[in-house]
Image (cartoon, rainbow, N blue to C red; front, side, top):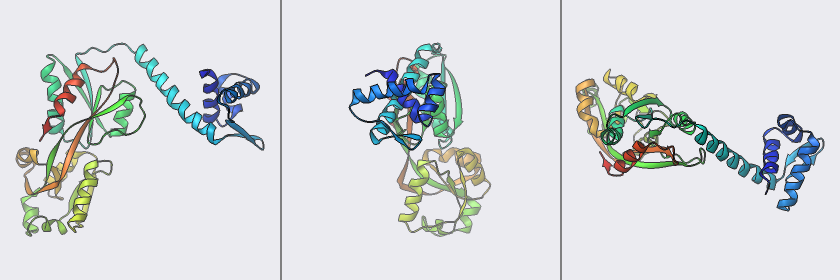
Length: 294
């Protein structure tokens, strides 16, 4: 198969037909059309058909264009990786999803710091999708988040489960005083502060509330876990948070445990790219993570 012919088809699919592809390829429409015709002969099927003055993909053409997109995306990534200057292994660039509590992130990164003396860690926070985009562009070495990456792009992205933690509901003493029922019945009318819709934890906690027949009033949803905790510390609502954070939540925000949510665990993942450019410290995080239960 001639990949140049496949590229012409892909360009036609991206740019609305042969004329659009020809313009961007700086070729005549006749040249693009004839090369796609050669590809059709190679595959033994029609990839483009004319509908009036327009040209559209056939079902086979759509399949070919989809595969072509993956092939050329992988080729572009290969070129970026081979052309990119090798990074110093003394710097580890970590993306941390907003849904990961900072104390948990610190514990997840700790194996890399311990194994590599003199390692400098550069952390960026944001939404998982945006951080994975930076990973694909080699601006990050690893992304820590609470859900595996299931998309096929970027190619060679892998998700390693690092562990999980039990969860509990926390609130201020004043808020608890206003809702004296036993747990979890006390949540029925207690205002709640929940993780943002992108968080896997929110979906699991929502399911737990439903299973217990609870529909508490929702005061707010937060992508940033630290901001959610700050609001809880001001008495605006109860939160669900890792049980392991009880001491720090009590000391720093006067938040007390209301009860344990045994059916809900918060999972943690490391997303990275396989290949020679993978930072060796990422391997320390993933190897240690398989044994992490908080």
